[in-house]
Length: 551
Image 1 (tube, rainbow, N blue to C red):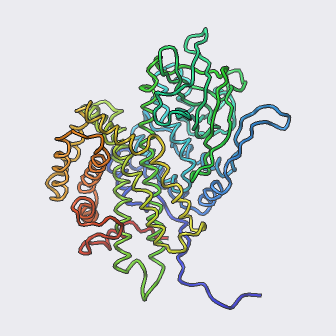
Image 2 (cartoon, one colour; image 1 turned 135 degrees about the vertical axis):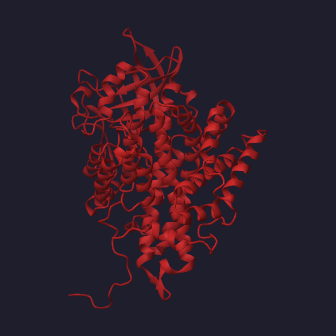
Image 3 (cartoon, helix red, strand yellow; image 1 turned 120 degrees about the vertical axis):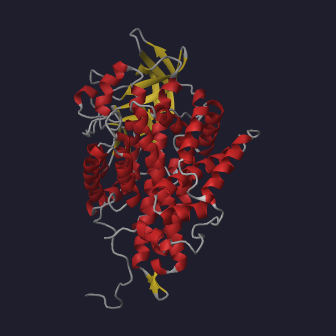
């Protein structure tokens, strides 16, 4: 019998069946801006295919299923043999297959590779952020692997492959491999120099056995891990494969999986090395931190890209809901106060995307030969920690505000917004939390004057276009003129650096209404502490329409 008590009305249609890439104007414009002209058509075609897949009902269902069915740890098989494996839902493997096949672990050494890969990572992270972790670590491992050419010869082709093969086998038998990282220990956290894992040399050059533990080891079913351990000459980087060349399992004991706030589709484990764990040295003994820092920097940029993805998905959902939902005599999107909120959210999202893609372009330019390569590398050394600090910190309040735009509907799991909210603090914590990033900015300012020069040249390209930006640049220079007590001011300074850089990029490249609103609300002192407090005289309708997705 059909119920006749009411008819469901005034609901937004499902946000499926759209091109996640093509509908994101800020992202699509950034790709075309930063790629060489001869690369644009191919990149656009690939990203539009990926974007349409990411917006499909099937892909959305995979993301939901992977999140709702978290991985399970199997320490032993049915006969009592130690196996240390993690079982994932099939949807997890489908997502990884799609992302690896789209080249999201392949950026280094191909023209425009970082821009193309960052754009794809931003698109696919909106489906389910958890599967981005192994993609990020595999991509980021390449510069560390290159510190040991013999290791890179074996592992780099597998890491940059466009083929995903799950299951533990020797790397020589796989068409593609994933890599992870293990640095954090119980007693150390971000202070990795205090690591106690020991590495004892074997007779063969470059081979060691490890004794110790890692408190956080994400994606433990990866094929190999870069870890830090204390060798005779000091802290050293090692590659630890899950399966040895002869097909036997390496000693890699998974003690338990972490029960995390979010990121639930991705396994994070505690790992023990029992004194027989075989490892291959990567780089020089005693130079482990320097060897692995290239990987850390690349994963930090992925934290920025991943947060930009969460922001984009959150504002997309909020604008979509308000474009269809009526209240108090009209559509929510047309209500002046709601429009102010949506515009403010859209500004935060576009600023994050524009900054993330500029840094990806700097990686491409830094990898190339030419006079600007060193300047781009210098810019990255200060801009990556500043961006990682600010963008990841803005993610949680921004997602929470977007959830509120849906009202009670947004607080219900079926909306998908609670999943975004649980995920939102993650990138601020991983790869060094806020204080670590701010102190890294201070270190660069003290020791690498070329990085500050590169930053000032970057923001200087926009000087004279907006008086509020010009005043903000002068304010940063004033802050930098007095380094007394700079450590206590590190967060404030890092925030200002990131905001000025975002403002400069938007003034140069965003539509005038976007740049005007950002400079007013973020640099000019005309915005409040909460979202939705922009000056009412701005062209907020245009800002909101730019962020809207048509379905």
